[in-house]
Amino acid sequence: MDINSKSPAAGGRLPDWLRPGGLLGIFSLAFIFGLSLTFELTRDRVTEQERLRLRSQLQELLVPGSYDNAPDEDVFTDSSTGRVVYRARQQQQPVAALLHTVAPDGYSGSINLLVGITIDGKLLGVRVLSHNETPGLGDAIELRRSDWVLGFTGRSLDSPPADQWAVKKDGGVFDAFTGATITPRAVVNEIRNTLVYYQQNHQEIFR
Amino acid sequence: MSTPSASEIIYQGLWKNNPGLVQLLGLCPLLAISNTFVNALGMSLATIAVLTASNFVVALSRPVVREEIRVPMFVLVIAGFVGIVQQVMQAWFYDLYQILGIFIPLIVTNCIILGRAEAFASRQPLWAATLDGLSMGTGFMLVLLSLGGMREMIGSGTLFADAWLIFGEQAEVLTISLSEDARGMLLFALPPGAFLGLGLLVALKNVVDERMKKPRSVSVELSQTITAKP
Image (cartoon, rainbow over all chains, first blue to last red; front, side, top):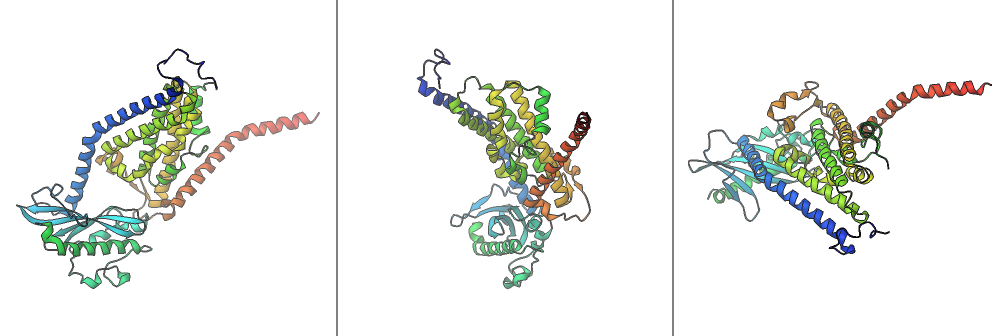
């Protein structure tokens, strides 16, 4: 192949064998510049969107008017387990804790949950933040698919008693879905674990 | 390679050489994201943006890019634009981005885009390459939207669910529920529904092509019988 004949004079500063690489380098730099620019221009908006989303998720679980702080900024991170807890307070007094937790044993991978617990250990509510469960079967844990997840509101470690904190198939009180047991079982177990965790650590959380 | 006319480019992209129905390229996003109409719309808009922009830049850089670095160059251009689209989507359509997730970065691997860069944009003038990107992208979008709409209607019994993800809160009213207690045919919401649906669409296109050809083939038969007599 005769590359040299194409442009003997043009771009004479670079030796021939370097020119393709040099050209790639220049284009890479141009795209790095373009990407950084886009990143800079959108960064504030993206952080703002993330904050808004978190805030609306937290607000959905909390009773309006029961708190006067910004729970999304009052964060406690458990250094030993990595758990993230958002704290709601009224005049500095703790009102509720919202725990971000992961049920590791869903039908297809982890299920991300937000569990709201009042200061006296009652469930304010539970929401599924993200999951990969089967559409039409396991996705009934989402509030927009069914109201199953509302059944946890008001429950605590005493109600139902600890040995019944399970899906009906496992001798507990919570319904499973037709054709999907693994998903609700994972969610129920994780909520129970979260309640236990909260009971054992609430002093630490609100210290 | 001579430059086709504008109408030929559009006809190729939308129908004759449609990426989804004829070339069968980009099947991964086509099958995975076609579960609802709105997801399909988000995915197709992102693909059109990347495809058009990459065709434009590839055609623009044609005079300076040499044979040896052609393909790394295309990949660089495509990956760059996907990064930009991803960032913009996160900023303005955050919730939709959360749903489409991994499939947005995966646009880089969509063969339609590399295919068009190599087969068309790197050999044609700027206007033709850009138009080709738009037409091919729109052709892809039409298939994705038909498949998405079909799967959503049969699979979940709704249409335009979650339209607010793209059009904002006031678009909530757009959602159509086909019946009060629709659970839908689960099969169509799941991956097999994507394959079945795409198969039906490809078949439908072939039937239409066949129908359009028919009058001509009849006249051919007639003329043959006539010329055979003497």
